[in-house]
Picture 1: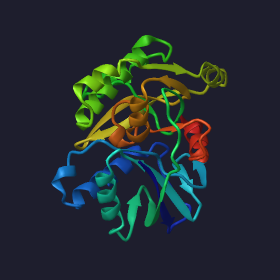
Picture 2 (picture 1 turned 180 degrees about the vertical axis):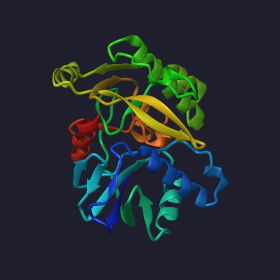
Picture 3 (picture 1 turned 90 degrees about the vertical axis):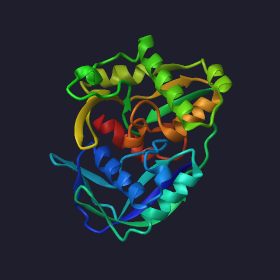
Length: 266
């Protein structure tokens, strides 16, 4: 289930860093803890986008000039979503970067048709390799054209699906088909214009800063429908609960402006 949270922006012109997922992750985790439901303190089966609105870019980051700012938030667990929304709307105001945001409303995202072959767009970068302290392996570049790229995403997806407790061992064993095929035309175009589809991003865990490599490009995923539905609702790759790996279905009417924004700095 995916929702769009609408905030009123009190101070137009305020800004957040280009990649501000870590600020959102800290705020969301704080809200989860504030609600005092211990069942969700260590919960990680959710995903979210960056903040969206009318922006201007400066060296400082993204300056927001729209009266409304939105955030797409997603989870397969309705109980968790209801809990999070309740705690969020008990707050008069949130400070993210220098943005003063007032929770205003929640909208359900329009459902999309998902089968065993889906073309996805990245709303936030996909992380293939988990980060470790004082270890550079999380920043290693892996070409989307090699099998290792799909293999790593398969391993992390199945592990997360197993951890959710919603799939039997027999079901998981049946989800062996999994192949990601990058949009080569897009990647060639990005490289020809000297832009990047893979960058290093900051990540914070227990106050420790890590760096990971994230990938942002369109791709087609060939996998069983339940796997496709899971990654659509909970993200793809590592650290989805920190705002990485959020996807949208290409040609869906849900989040067009967000896609343009993500591509601009990915």
